[in-house]
Amino acid sequence: MEILERIIAIILPVFIIIGLGYGYARYKGAGVKADMVAVNRVSMDVLCPLLVFTALAGKDFDVGQNAWLILAGALIALGSGLLAWPVARLLGYDVRSFVPPMMYNNCGNMGLPLAALAFGANGLSAAVALFMACNLVYFTVGIKIIQKGHPDHQDGSLKFLLSPMMLAMIAGMAFALLHWHLPPFLFVALKMLGDACIPIMLFALGVRLLDINFSSWRIGVVGAIVCPLAGLMVAALLDGVLPLNASQRGQMYLFAALPPAVFCFMVAEQYQQEPDKVASIVLLGNLAALLFVPVGLWLGLR
Image (cartoon, rainbow, N blue to C red; front, side):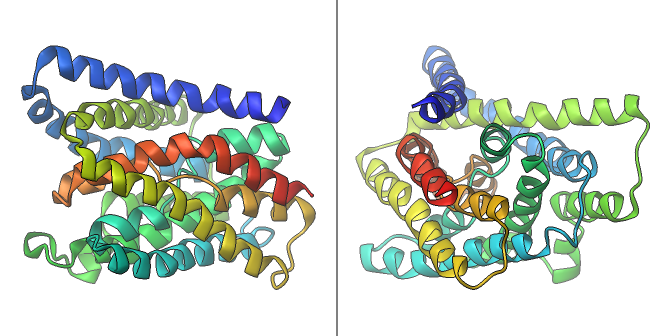
């Protein structure tokens, strides 16, 4: 019961911010959506990359110690997408809208706090490893899936590697591997900007809820179920294969049970890839986390 109360305490603020965004959009009218385009662009080009960089560079991150866990995170992300693909085909959903959110879960603004609560301060290093693995899969395979059919966004591989998010991951890993440290005042400034990305993304999601219709709620329910179930299925397969210690095993199951990330909506907004449907998947997925995250914790802490 105590774990459930802690999970609710983390998830509830998410829905409060989403609700504020929706209420503001209802009050101001549909023109707010156009105003948010520039805000979303700043979030994707500056704030979110800083969130990734500070998460990697600001921790005592040991790549060797977390190598198997990084592999587990990458395989869960890839496996979830693979399992979600036939579901999308069967139900007639656009693969570009449905599959990428199944591959990129809320391992940042939900996964990191949950890991700290469940496994203590030492669990943050493992959570950052999973966060990096998930980002690596999404910003390679996931983005390529979304780009298919969008000729205006067909980037070459080299240009894609130079995207702000990939550069932030590379820089963060370099700082972690070489044990570099920014001056505290500079790191704090960058971290403050990165942390600002989380409420802005949630607020933007609330604004987008104005466009949700009945069909969007249907795909949202399916996505909310498929994402954690697919992740937990892959984690169960990996459980008997990878040499994970008890703490890493618990982290793997918690990671697998997380809902789709809010950032998936931001990407859908940028590519105009049915952002209303992706918003539904994200919103209902985070609501379903009240059920699936305790399941993931129970499986990992047995």
